[in-house]
Image (tube, rainbow over all chains, first blue to last red; front, top):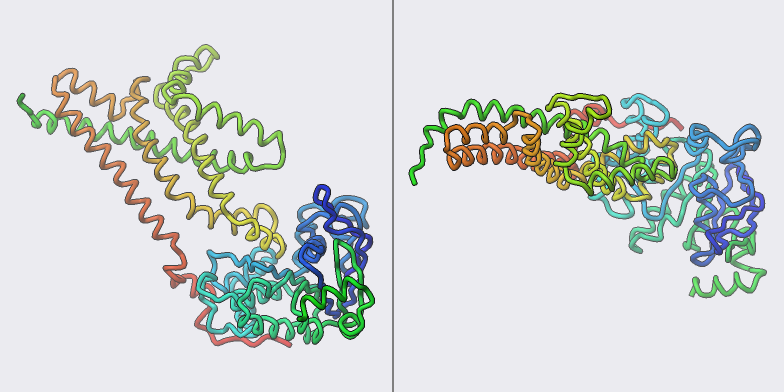
Length: 249
Length: 240
């Protein structure tokens, strides 16, 4: 589903990604863990080309992201938009559009990008909002929602496009601790439906329970990949061990 | 000193008629200037230097020189380039050019105040640049822009009096003509000032109305939007 080959992303002298290769199968849930600044976010942002990689290849469904004609030339804006429409993204800071109510946020992509009639999109959006437990918040502006509710709207907004892949960029890192659970439960539900997910997170409990594989990143490099049992139970790398010690205390 | 407001009353129809010219001059130049300003603002933020640099230069020159000079320039200097214009169109051109420069910076500030994450979220669902501008950036920017934009529109209204120097028969020139023949400067200027005050007060009221209109989260969904979203229909179930 996703193949990443020798991905580099440099910001000036900083190597945010320093040769990352990873492949994610359809239906797989992969959690990215690692200290702040290890490159988790950058990796996700390169997958949907919000950041343009310095070098390396990202393929989603066999198509090289940001390029067309089999990688012969740069993708047009139209092509890039089409690719992004098939990749859902959930941001740490939500980025709901404040001038639209929840339901409008959820259906915006369907209406504007896919050209679906509002009535049809709204029916789908309402069902999705109910699924994430927000049937009573359809008409609420983001400003009037709690962080956990906002993030669930964001997940519904991404799911509305029926993406092949869902990227989660630290979805619970800016939430109050008591609101983390409701978002993780929705993510678990999405994973249980068999959607391919790539999740950058500090929630080790979630990674342990839901992930098929866990990837440990440090200084832009993948240090360790394995099942949750392997990475959490028998980390091979000294850095992984130290990181897990600091976070699991 | 004896005041004779009967004179002002007698000439009031002339002043009101001239006020229509002032309104036309202001509204048309502000409208043209705003449309141009929107594109100038986008060009000013462009990563392409060939778009950005001329825009910066234009704003720098036009904001840095007096409107009075622009009016003279278009009206008196244009014939040297083989273009002869009547006073009114000349004033429209000069005032639109000026409004464009000022409004471009106001609009740019509003567009840039929209958080980058808002824009990224829109790209992430597959929107293209034009859609992002139309659906995400402009609706949020409008709210930020209203107060400085309307403040500028009020200045622009008052600055239209400068068009009197190139013989546009607007409110100020008409007032001057009346008091120089009646010698009733105090009365005529008082009434003229009152007319300007009415015009600018309308703009202040419009500003308050627009601010209320865009305070979306306090107004909730209107009936029209509720109906469009079929919010009263029974909740559908998602196909498995």
